[in-house]
Amino acid sequence: MDFGNFLAMGGYAAYVWPAYGAGIVILAAIWLDGQRRRRAVERALAALESRRNEQ
Image (tube, rainbow, N blue to C red; front, side, top):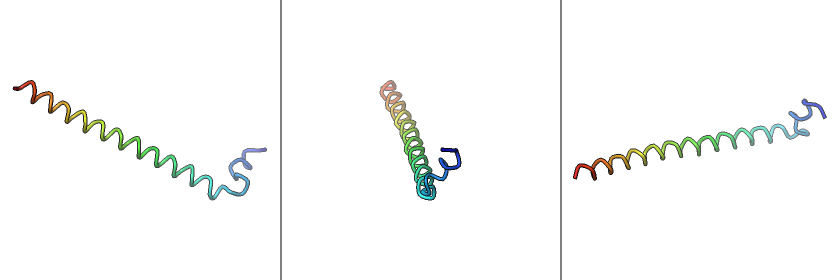
């Protein structure tokens, strides 16, 4: 088996590679959303802690 046959995926490359690409895009979007939400939670927690310390 050579590299060209691997990339051709037995004739199913038109289905396999876009599926891999979509999977990577979806996983990246999930990771980015998690990072965004984590930062928002950290900001909210810091605000709550600062309010608690003011009282």
